[in-house]
Length: 252
Image (cartoon, rainbow, N blue to C red; front, side):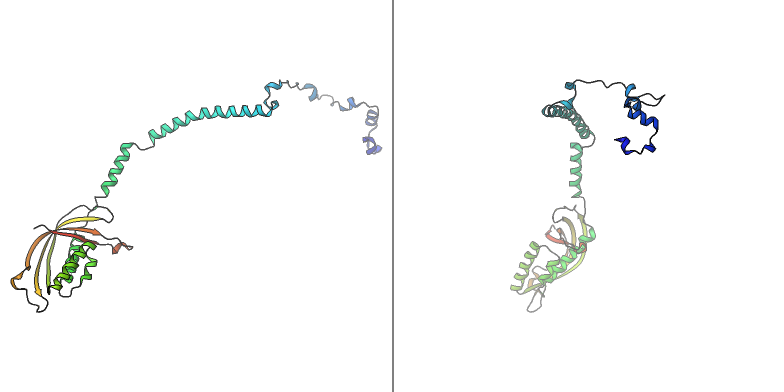
């Protein structure tokens, strides 16, 4: 067939004679000086089918794979335990360290102090509101910006009683001095207590005549020490947050 497809003019006489004489062996031999790879390469040794996993049935191969995975897992598990113990020993904080951190956090909740200027400003604001609520104008709403709800309720009751008795007070604040300030309790809301010396005068008058009540009951002029308890109000705007009086106790 090859000879029929190739023109006779393109085929050499020797090649034509060789192929027509069916000397295929001589035609396939390598040229002189070149050794045959097929003859020089060593034959691959045959291995028993039992030692070749690729010749095993599918179930047997699956069992072999499962056994290999189990052996690898058994080897990795103790190594992971050792690594975790090393991490706990070197990286994880000890119980003592964690306790110290918690103690420090708790201590920070009580280390902040209310500034003395804030104490003075809060006391002055409270005394101004008190004078408005108990004075002739009866402006009890002034207590809203200076006292907490319980303190406002108490002094609104006093203002109502004074109005019913047709009397009012004239207060004049003369001086405020901070004696001591306790640490702020960083609760919700923050609270603080301060000892303050206040000097003021007060006179009780009749709201119908404007005259001083006979006998001078409740009138005074002097200095006294007050233990104020303050509560800091929260606000969306930080500069609008301020300390308000939640309790006032005269100590002497």
